[in-house]
Image 1 (cartoon, rainbow over the protein chains, first blue to last red):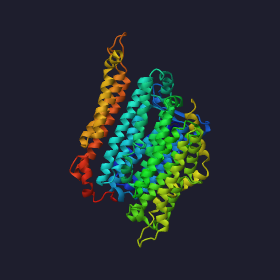
Image 2 (image 1 turned 90 degrees about the vertical axis):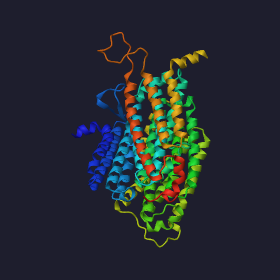
Image 3 (image 1 turned 135 degrees about the vertical axis):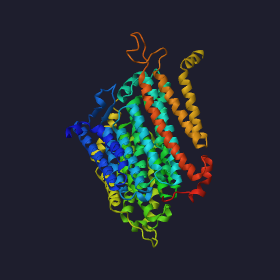
Image 4 (image 1 turned 90 degrees about the horizontal axis):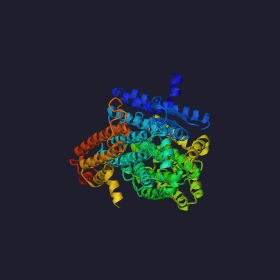
Length: 498
Length: 133
């Protein structure tokens, strides 16, 4: 039995959450059981990710390849738990556990009765399963299917509240996300036309031979994938759906949407750019310059838009737009250092944004206030929540000893190495702007006079979830060791043929 | 020039796909009516399905069933068509979900016009922002 589980882990980590998601609805009346099962599913995912990481580490970085149905590569579908896959798997499953814990016994207030809470968990597990799939998949069409599962479950989570604005935000999101998936599917179709393969490795090899003959078709495929995933990952100017969607969703949903769902698309984009098109082609077509430019504008514009927001959750949502800019900037650096920075920042931003959104949600729930200037004195009334928020903020700004610093540092070095100075300036300016939009919140919370109100920290599971996330932000900042090493190996692998 | 035109005419399914995609995208982005937006999405997705299915087709080819075809026959590629079955299923689910959202929006705002929804937002929801529930 254990051997059976161990040899099938790469597929189990994807289908276990999906399976649990489908058995939850009939249990809707027994909400404790639903919560326990959902929690077990995410914990299993994290354990499996840890085990796979240990296997890959023991094999000195060579991947754990799983063939679905036993069909070998060009014909069958492959799941590859390599360095990159395991890295993202750890981030997904690691963040999904505390976020789920935060929802425990707390969701009814946000989404309504027990049936709606169960529906929330179903969508949540579908989302986690599909994101895990994005981490391990090595098949172009599989990517499309997973992208659609993520999109639909995200839209469901956004519309989880009964408020009409939630339905509105979900509809806008759905329309634009479907536009994005149609573009991605078009890109996959062109790649299949050009190479005759759906397996990423085989498609890449074939594309290396075929692309000088069909430069226009390849250029079209590249632009389809970048714009398609760009819409879904809220890459600036394509971010218009994100603030409404992430600000209206229930807090655990905002945390997972901002922290992980956006990152799933970026990991897919990374796999397409480096795993299929390859560094040589990107440089020949000057795609890396476009990516860098998109990243720079994203950082600056996203941060300035965040500064203009008065509501805490909307400010955090716009900040996600800026952080996506950082990651795309790293993708465009075309060197190992820049990619290490992008990967590490991707994971640490997932943790940080989850902590920030969850504490913002807890504050909103306790105080009923959304505007930042109304949050005076929150820090003294809700010490645990605000401590998590402060640690998250320091991480996002990129202060040393917090995880965001390491990511930003490598991004800075990578841009410098690539000889591009605009991104160096943008990374630094982004940090300053980030301080400008987060520090006023902290100042208001701790140093402004508190009103005579009875605001309290949330319950025990919520506090535990916040503490877990805050600890990870600090731990990754002080001792990034093995995690950074994994990112380095993954980056080196992506650039191996370059 | 005539060479290019000839190429385009021979590959007319791709031309139609590009045209449909443009029409669909234009409708999605510019039409204020939610139903029309949804129709635009469907047209856009059909364009991609056409691109895939056309890529597997060979003129004069037969379905790849060995018992039916004789030894000389050219088989068409069945894989793109099979993939598009999945694509159609996804498209149906997206449509169903979008329709459900439209119903919710209609119940709240009494209209399916995006411009009127924006105009009535304050009146229906009480403020510009978001409520607790």
